[in-house]
Length: 267
Image 1: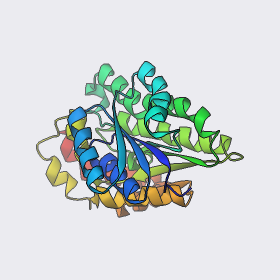
Image 2: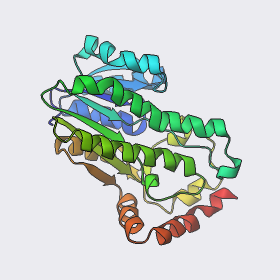
Image 3: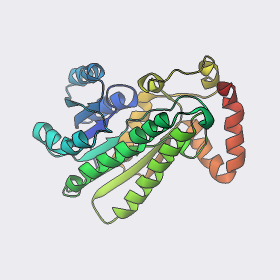
């Protein structure tokens, strides 16, 4: 599905990959419904898109709010027209602690944002997408869905849940005009920790330096390309691609490798 002249919904559009997705989409002629909890950062995204000549409408909502999510398709249709594409990009990490120290309320919040939110958005938009002549859903999972990161075990579980949900959804929609893509980014240069409200360990930068980070703009281009080429799955970054292969060939070796690189963050 070419995105030119299509209406695309992007969650987490206020910063990081969501902002870059919005800008990439308007460069290709799409109209964007930009969704985020942060009014100020959404306004910045809209201003950047406007400078490119793009059409963007902003919607300040919490994607874990079932009432507001259910209203979104109607609200977007009033301002931009019916949605042709949904990109579930918004996500958060957990506090960087072992499961034994992780509070249940923090674990539940991660699951609500990373899995329940996208599920509710798919449920809200899918009836309308099925009425379009062509449409697409893209869900952003993580390398952590198949390569376990100690200190981010529930985050990884939430992204693994989103992975299998998306793959099942694609199978259910095979005989429709709705394409489905699952994305597995590796280390992306974004401010996800700050947006998640999480304080990283003091040596986080040192640990992160072991991984080559992919620019958020490069990641956004790859995702829009995947929509236009109707790819069922993509990995983003050499780290995500390597661990995808290694986790299937020797999952224990892959898990041990990540542990050795990240254990210093756990104290």
